[in-house]
Image (cartoon, rainbow, N blue to C red; front, side, top):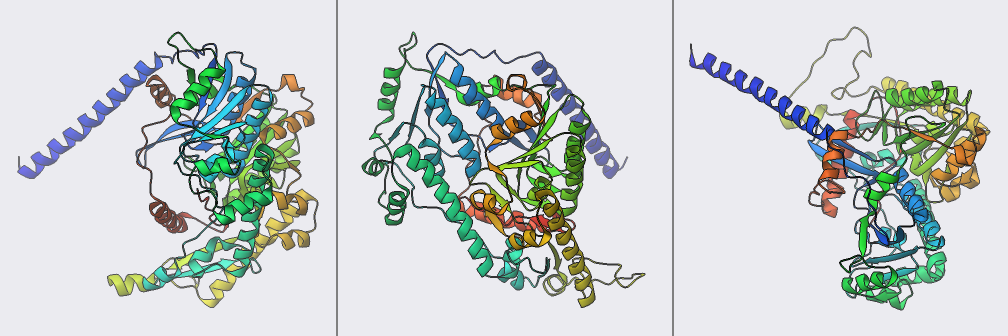
Length: 588
């Protein structure tokens, strides 16, 4: 046998045997895990829940393995957090919450829902003590709900206001000799998702809308802080504008905190509030573990909670995406289930594929015809996300929810000059008809551009028509507040895009009333495409971890560069016309 044949045969044998060994290994692990059960929830008397919220927060909890990136993905669901806080409020063993949040990976509307739940917990008579060495805007916004907020003497306290910035790629694309052929709705001047490809700075329209919704988000934060801390919005703005607070200790001088303490002094304070355990220590319990255990996961229910979280894509979609096919199937399943009397559609999406959005919209229309559909908007329900929402019987959002962005666009890159001049690659083609080939390597003719522009305008007209039907408005009214414009919830309520301020609990209560379900008989059934891998979840629980081993946190520059890369990559993966929100950065 020749060396080549022997080598290939050996390589094949290694690959086959290696694969079999891996399959057997994971099979054994699966059997082992299936025979193991995490210990039951053992909360002792006089327990203090330690709330750190270290995991990214989404609408639903899940643990899964991304086979593409070989990464363990895990989220703590808002539904679990709210259920955990509600359960702790009436749990006699829980005396209070120690709120110590380092990095809060959540949007402002999600933070508000958690904050409102903590305020309710505190009003029940139980205590919340907030403390950390460093406070960002997001963590302080949440922590300020506590009646007792303490800071480290020389820590960081960021209270300078909100800001957003965007990288523009036009100059880089020109250097690469790549031309981005962009077709927006003819009057969609606010549809700024494509501006990084068109300009080197924000357009006047984009700057106007961004300033307006940032002001609205900041004002909502200040109103909440004013209520909790008794410091006026005007004074809070003065503190931010004048940069009065440089380090944590100065927050006490301006009544944003109650005192300066070291960690051991915080422990002593907590000890004074509860009866200590046999070791003479405070009995702490992880809030995330408590919340996951207390969350009710009904296999059957009378109200469907359909989770629509992530970008909207054609087909099934990946982890963290809303697939047109998979999401419409979930809505259809809830509609056909006779035990489901009402539907709550929870939307947390910046939009995406216009086609997929329309497919989901159709299923919502069919469902609305046979049972009530109520929408609960999270951090963002815009563009394609609003497309889904507009058909509902009622729409709830929070003042700091981002919504609107009613508009569409298409992008077709022309890479011919790049390939020819930089790589020496030329392309030729044969086609049966004049417009047979529309590709990255062929520049659009004026006639082809007009054809695509007509298609984009037709989709926009269809979009505003469906919004008009769903919201009881004229298409001209929708167009006047559309054109791709982004709105904060505090403004959206005044122009008819949403009906009422409220979180997921308010939407559930409304759906129950519409479905003639009494409060005590509400049973929720969660519909989501973000499934938890039971084996991974059990392994993590058995290890006593709240989250997988964390990788190093990316720097601000790395994060921005990754955003740019993902944006450029998304252009290639997006198919068809897009109804998508521009990128919004939470500066933490």
